[in-house]
Length: 281
Picture: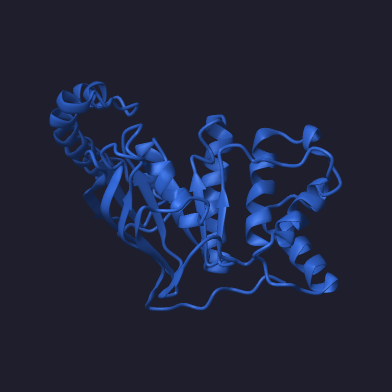
C-alpha cells in the first residue's frame, strides 16, 4: 500500500543560489532560488535554452551545479535522493521487461533503500493501480500507447514513494485528449498521495490548469523573472476569463524579458510570445 506523505509546513525541495557554468563561458544559471512545498505542484515556464532542463537535472542529482545547494526536507544533498523521482518526455521503458517489471525496476536503483520482496510487490501493485493500468500489467512496452507508457513511467516514480516528482515536458508528445488525462492523473496523485511535483512545460495553458504556482525563468544567465500563485481549485476548465487574464500577464512578462535578451544573445522562444499577444490584444 502506498502511504500518503504527511503534510508539512516546510519545503520538501529547495534550490539555493544555484549557478551553472560550462568552462569560461557566461553562466547559464546564476543565483537561482526555488522551492517546492509539500503536496504543491509548481510549473516552470521559460524560453528554449534558458536552462530549465539543466535545472531539473541538478535538482534530481543527475548533474552537478557549479555553485549553490539543493536541499530535501531541509537537508543538503549531493547526487540522487530516494525522495526525489524524475520522469522525462521519453518514458524510457526497458523493452524486454513487462509493464509490471518496469515499475519494479525503479525500486532497484542504487540509491533506493533496500526493502523486502513482499513490500516491493505491494508497492508495485499499488502504483499500477493508482495509474489505472492493472489490466495491462503483463504487457510489453511495444503493446502500450503513448499515454499508457507515460502512466507506467509515473507508476515507476510513485512506487518509490517520493515526496516530489520532477517532470521534464512529460506530456509534450501526447495528443490533446491523452495530455488532458495525464494532467488529471498528476492532480490525482497529489490529492491521493500528497506527492509534490515540479513540472517543466512550454504550454502556458497546461501550467494554468494544473499548477498551484507558476515560476517564469528568463534572462542570461537564467533567473526567476515572475511568479504567480493560483488560488483557484481544480478543475479549472470553466475559469476562462480569470485564467485568460493571468495568461496575458505571463506572456507580457516574458515579452519584456525577451526583448533585451534577444538583442544581446539571439536567444529565441518556442512559446510564440508575439503571436500569442497579437491574438489576445
